[in-house]
Image 1 (cartoon, helix red, strand yellow):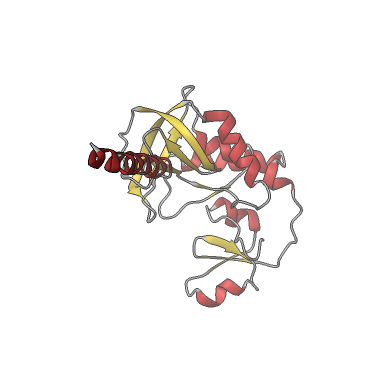
Image 2: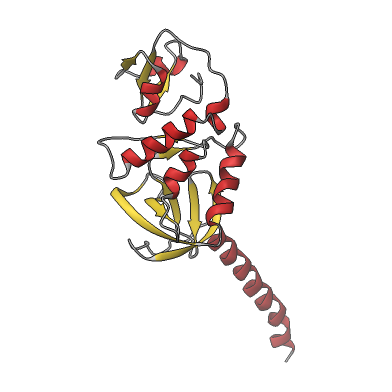
Length: 212
């Protein structure tokens, strides 16, 4: 009896510790989750930031076609809050592009709410992100472009700030730079664009270093 009692407490503690570690792993998405299916409805469990969400079950989804400010940058919190109000704990439907995942293992998708609204476009329409396109025009590229132009015309969110004009801009690495941006030194493929809005509407968001 003494031997059983001697090991009883350590065994219980081991089970408790394992349960805590397992729960944390699930919450942080460290355990592999089943790949979502196109067309099915999933509950949004968590909003990571303005362009990344987590579904019930742990799948992380990166919204296609947009780029929102990083945490701590202006309008980052508003972009996150916008998604919280729109889709947290709500059901969403996914559509996929040519690439299903990014290098971080996140699912790449167009996200629709139960009203049929394309959430990727709604972020742009609210002025909390920029059009971000790599490769050929995507399926919903025109809808995203119109949403960005609408936000810009209304000077919403990110479009309300004043910008110092340059003689021209450089598109490189998928983003728009000022011609004196230090990051350009490491980039060989460049494209000169005379108008900032033309560059941004091509799907090249502003560089986070030089901030055009």
